[in-house]
Amino acid sequence: MTGVLPDPGQGRSVAPSPGAWRNFLHLWDRMAIYMPVLLMGSLALSTYWLVRNAPTFSAPEVVKESGHEVDYFMRKFTIKTFDENGKLKSEVYGTEARHFQDTDILEIDQARIHSISIDGRLTTATANRAYTNGDGSEVQLTGNARVVRDSSKDANGKEMPRLEFRGEFLHAFLNEERVQSHKPVILIRGTDQFTGDTFAYDNLDQVANLKGRVRGVLMPKSSSAAASPAAAKPPAR
Image 1 (tube, helix red, strand yellow):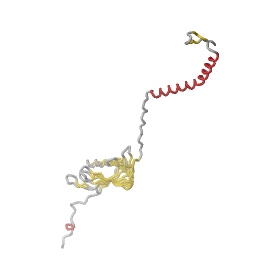
Image 2 (image 1 turned 90 degrees about the horizontal axis):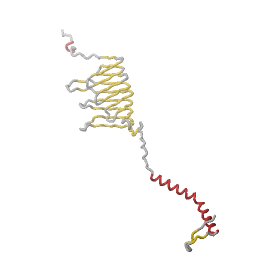
Image 3 (image 1 turned 180 degrees about the vertical axis):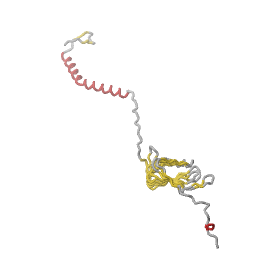
Image 4 (image 1 turned 180 degrees about the horizontal axis):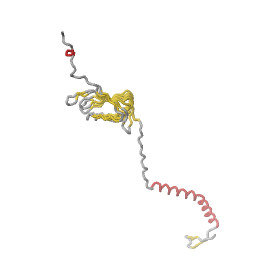
């Protein structure tokens, strides 16, 4: 290989010496050794730049499903609620209770619930287990379920006899004074007793609706016209 390099000092071209060519080729060989390293470095820098300047998209948020789990529990507790005037509205007692956050349902073992209506009538509900909503206005009773409304007088002063419901399941709406069940129930009103396969009772309308095999026992009331002991005494001779 031959070539001509300009000589700026003389203004004419001269041929390079064989030693200069050997030095040039030796330098080129040494640079060729590091060429792959330089190319890899350039590629890495280019990739880093692309990653830094590429548009980013926020990952979709994972929606955490709230399972039917207990968020708190109580043992041997009493919960009392009051109205806006500070008057006792209801009282709930149980040996143990578990609250479920997703449904706001309180599950109570050996429950005893007192509810006082606006006019002061007391209703008591008991069962082996009860399920009540957040404000205690709706209760489902299972196992030896019992709802008792004490005797009282209505707005007209008429005597309202004691009322009791018994069954394995009772669904009570305490604020509305309604009780219903899709299972057999015993209804006791004063001294009278009724049974049915299903029933619904509305205290405001004073109507009990029993269905299925309905039976009733009506106890006779004492006659006010019965003679007094003095009247029944035979006349003296």
